[in-house]
Image (cartoon, rainbow, N blue to C red):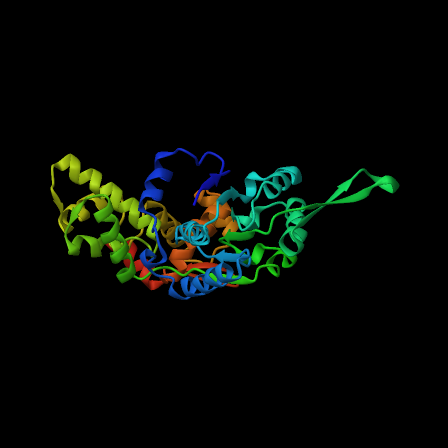
Length: 330
């Protein structure tokens, strides 16, 4: 399975290489998201038996939960080439048309952040997904005419953190609509242990469990924390990472026992101190924090809402008693 990347600025970075090293190599290595994986395995095996392209699939959920890794496994099991692009990076119809016309039969096209693709570019996908052809309008006015270009049967896998922002015409063209949930600590512990073995890191089980507890239910964060803890252990000359070493590392990283980092606590503190616990509107909150709305809503709020630190009401955000307790202990 080959991978072509069109993600702007992603290719060749050390972070991407590190993440690829830790990605599962087979469905048997993919921990968690059991219902999603079961559905995907059936779709893949059906496509292989029929010797046709797999049906298009939409993967939704917070970032860092393994959507890209699953797309790589799909392409590998299909014996196809995987093409990765980012929705916001495709600015012109011609860019997407060029990618589609270069696909080979049964190739997999993975579009990350597909909800951020411009509607004029998105429209190219409609006929490509249904009829495997491109409808190109040439000219303007009365002399305009439509030209049809055939494309090879392919599989589109869309990844989104906001499925509700997809247009209805695009959403209904996906045969599979699968949602990723946050991982539980037990699943994260298995992932961390497996990745520690891949990195040849000695680590005690209590240390693994503590990292899992502070990883916000997200494998990407768990891998990042594991990598940082490894760095601290190397500098301190520690051969096997203990829970004490993890606690020391997390303190330097400003991650508390609830898994909250500096920005999480800043959000909660602003609601508590500036707005007397809420409710506060998202625009006012972002203005006070000096952060972009999408950053607050996509990166920080999902975990804070899931764990009950923030409550969303019709009048705005409020902090919970648990949030007040966490701020008192940090």
